[in-house]
Length: 73
Image (tube, rainbow, N blue to C red; front, side, top):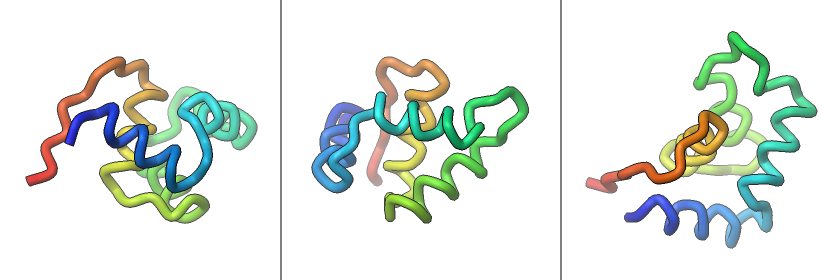
């Protein structure tokens, strides 16, 4: 599955764009230095019912990734 497909699926499931998630994360203080990936991923899983791969795709965007190769195997 391509990175863009992950992002498209997330938007279809939650109605939120990556920018929406970034704004929400900023409000929660999750984009401050020292916040670990696991904390962000746990928030995305709990509050938005995302799977691990989808949560990691959002985390990758937070960290500035433009394109990530995600292998679903």
